[in-house]
Image: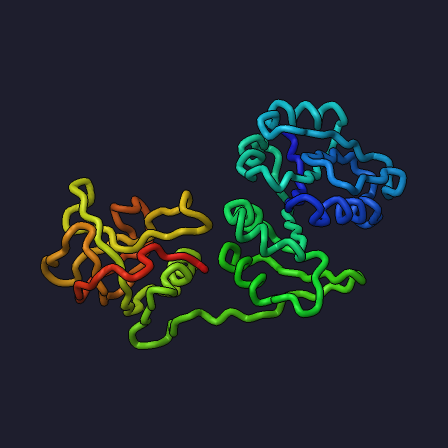
Length: 316
C-alpha cells in the first residue's frame, strides 16, 4: 500500500498573496519542523521565495509551467526524487483545479486548501472570470481577502463566497497585517418552521443547496415552490422530475436541479416541460430515480403558471 502524502493547496490569482503566505508558513517552526517538503510552484509572480529564511532546509522547490504537464507519474516522481513527506502547491489561478485533482495519485490527500484574493481586483475578476472565481472558492477551507481597505464592501465579498461555499472561513487582511474574520450570519431566505415553507423564485438556488446539504432537516416539511416537470418513459411508473435549471457560476455550468416527484393521491395532469407552482410534502427515503435515499416530493396540488422572468435559478 502506497504511503499517504499530505497535500497543502494554495490557490488564487496572480499577486493575491499566496507566495507570501507560503513563505511565512515555511518560516514558522510550528509547521516546518524538518519534514521533507516538496513545494510545487505553478506560476511565477513578482515575489520570490527566500529559502534561507525557512525554518529548516528540507524544502525542495519544483516548477510546473503547463497544466498539461501535471500527471500522477510526475507527482510521484517528484516526491520520490526528494523523498518528500508532504507537498505544498502554489496553484496557478488561471488553471482549473480539476487539472490538479485529476493528476493527484490516490495516496496524495488534500489536507487543507486555502484561497487568496486581492481585494482591490476582486470585483473585476469576479465579473469577468466568474467561472475561475467559483472554481477557486468551491472547495477551500479559508478565503483570505488581502489588501482589504476600510470602506470596501464586506457584504458583497461575503455573498460571493457563500454562493459557492457555505462552510469556509472568510478573513479580511489589511495592509498593516490586521486580520478580521467574517462574522456575518446568513439566515435562510425562508421560514423552515412555517406550516408551509414558501420558496420564492429568487431563493430557489439557496433552498436547493440547503436541502442537498441537510435533506433530513426537510423530511416531512410541507413546501410550496415553482418549477417545471420532466416526463420520461425511462422514469419509474408514476414518477417525474420537478425542479429548475440552476446556474452555479456561468452559462456553461447550467444543469437541472430538482427532485423525484410523485402524486400524493391519484394521477396528476402533468405536462412535460410545463411550469407549475406545486404544494406538497418532502420525504427523505429511497426512490428508484436516485437508486438510493434522497428527497422525494409528494405533490398534493399543481397550479399551472408562466415561466418566471428569470427561469434559470442562480445564487446572485
